[in-house]
Length: 209
Length: 209
Image (cartoon, rainbow over all chains, first blue to last red; front, top):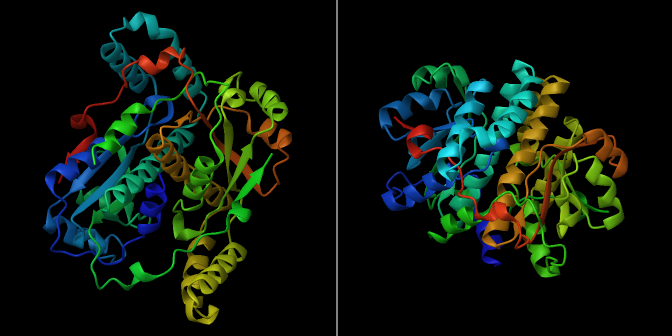
């Protein structure tokens, strides 16, 4: 059990990756499957993950990432994107997926779909976009935990130019890049790995009722 | 390794908890420590976790949760709250915590603090609030993963009345409740545990570059 805490203490926002070390295919498949299983509001999964392996493209992305070299040096770069919109179409697709997966008739779960649609219809376009982008943070939380459990290093990043990313990666107009997560293996020269983890005490963050 | 995928497949949004089963103290401490270790933007940790054990209070919260009984039936209810504001004061506190933890002088890391302050100063009040609330979703992602690895059930919830929650739990004006997560053990009569997990295929959510 306390392996979990050891794993979470082991992880840190890696500053320097070992460029010679690649995540092997089976481990990377496990990470992808973890991302696929990420929970989301109503199960709508409004996310897309762009896996950038091309070194040429990643060279170009460094400038769009305020020079943060992890973007090119890590084994893989994961760009978590969220849909700009959500509405009846996405709910219908989800209802269809539920019906197929669970061998229901679409009519049996139409009421559930209508409930989702009416809730979503009350949101402004901006609220829908924000709601979708929040789901990217659930994915990040799960991804960092999965990586830590596998002793794979990761660097969560919010700081980058989303417009430049959209252009360089030719992201469809339906999605926006929300978070970056280069993953791979820390360089042994990365001094930040030896720094003590900084966290508030439990007294600061927990309240009991 | 593939334990991770088994754990993530095992979890589901629990509809009915076994009211007789409590998470034992040492396991709950582990969950708290996982929450304390949750990463956040700039490491600012703009979150507070309210742990509601009182059955009286939880009875009152059911009505503020659209009747979802997990709120009272689970072993523990975790309410993830985010700070409404973030600015110089929070950065100063963080810088001080870094200095104490890593045995630096505050002056040595002042530049890092100034960088954070100037970035945050560019946000509107609403953007700061949204940014903080996104960190709650990282916590949720990590929490659900930790619980799944411990075979503890959980129900992530966005649907509740935040104003009623703030009143009933007497949450300080500085924080807003963002997400609920009742945790405990599934009731063996909860039929939803037998339903197949619904997820998009890898082809739908991954793109390679």
